Image 1 (spheres, rainbow, N blue to C red):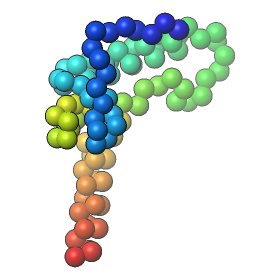
Image 2 (cartoon, rainbow, N blue to C red; image 1 turned 30 degrees about the vertical axis):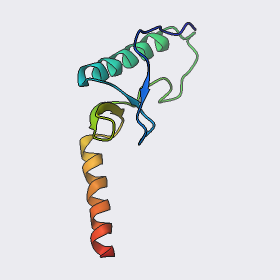
Image 3 (cartoon, rainbow, N blue to C red; image 1 turned 90 degrees about the vertical axis):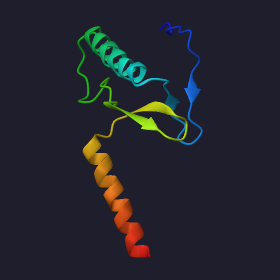
Image 4 (cartoon, rainbow, N blue to C red; image 1 turned 135 degrees about the vertical axis):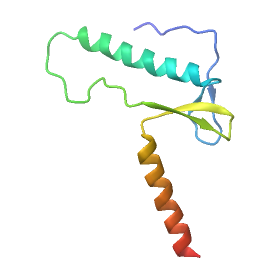
Length: 96
């Protein structure tokens, strides 16, 4: 498979190790490209049975990273993230 060539060099966040995008639009377009390429790949398969999540893209949301001042992709919904933060805050409160 031929790799897509881009003029943009890939920048990674030092705090998370994730790919960092300069703009929110660029990150959202990347999610769209990933989803469309997965649909195209799935349609080119020879008809053999696929597993439930085979080829599906997990990334569904973009968020701002204050460490690198860029945008990252995540599969967590906003609700999942808020629940995670609530649990962390409760643990911190119980330790003090």
